[in-house]
Image (cartoon, rainbow, N blue to C red; front, top):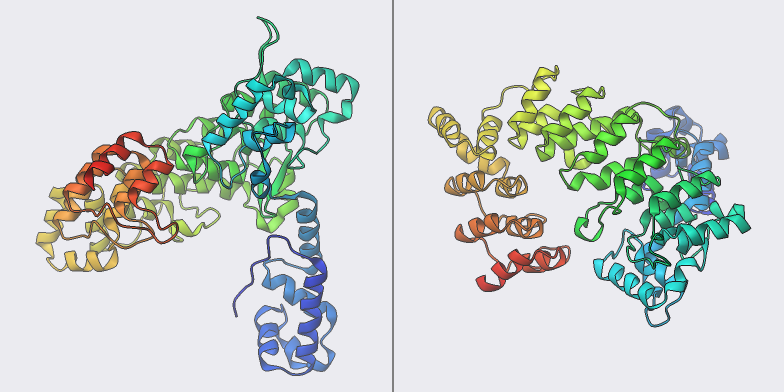
Length: 498
């Protein structure tokens, strides 16, 4: 019996209605309702006495289907979503540069994690240059700009402004500071210049919460720490704050929880480990009694599992430095973290071998990781993805059937080699008959174009990659992906390949 996904904006009355409906259906003896009770009630025998099936039983079943241990736990989660849920990306389109209001400045200048675009940040800077008085219009704009003078004057007149939510996204000032990418604040004198770090300290000294945050679309906890560290799936348009590490240190020193699930997720798309070093320094992987974990309970990974996730990212992305940091911080070398679907339920060492990441696999082996059982097909694929042609030929000589089995098991291997940015592996796989235009969520050429790897783009084009291929999500060509990521060298290369 399948589980259910809680809506982004759950309604308690609607959930009560689901429970009431289930109770009526059980009492009527409907077979599917009785099946739900047997699958989800901790006492499956509750379905054997439908006439006495209580409302509390129905509520418990509804809660458990949504992944909560009890109805009160589900109620508490709904209350948290109602209090902290925000959807800033849905308000981005309200900005008008022509209007030039304080709200426009914030809508244009902040990361929203939906429709982000560096051009919007440039428009915010242009608006501020045209109307410098907007910097001190409110505590929210002063924080976003890092205008310490204006912010100090506002807080002197109204100390409560340091924590008061408002502005276009209903955020506290510290969140506007953290998510702002405005970097052209006005200067009143030679010694007066914007200073977001000093502005953050000022807000914290006046009572701002270092763990301030919101639930993006009612689901994911985006904190001030998440905002300053930046990054994300659209990494080109979601850069870190220009003072990212300094601001992160200020927040952590003031009590921000280093076990920040969304910050860790957003920063996994780039190899830089500076954020990870900082979070480990402040206790990533150990329980700091963070408020977001307390609020979200079962919907939020434990500190130990969040640390294990970093080991899995190291295994997936071939990042030995990440593996060393996570292991030194106490990560279980066999830990499976929060079980993100991308990691296929594998242990870190199995994942590293699957991707041909032999250095990370060796680090894990030395740390005591349990190696996966021998598999000739996986061994062959590991050699190919690692670009080890001699080992691949040796294994192929031992068992010629291994090639057909490998192509059948992992037809998208060229995409994995491209993601690892290994042209030697791409050429080896292509020479063995793996498809360079494999129909997956994207083609290898899309991947190389998005990363801006001109050498790999040339390699794929030489091997027959199709520059006109379109992926299903955005119906975009590799050129479209390069343009979105602003990869100028690759853009020119793909335009001349048409």
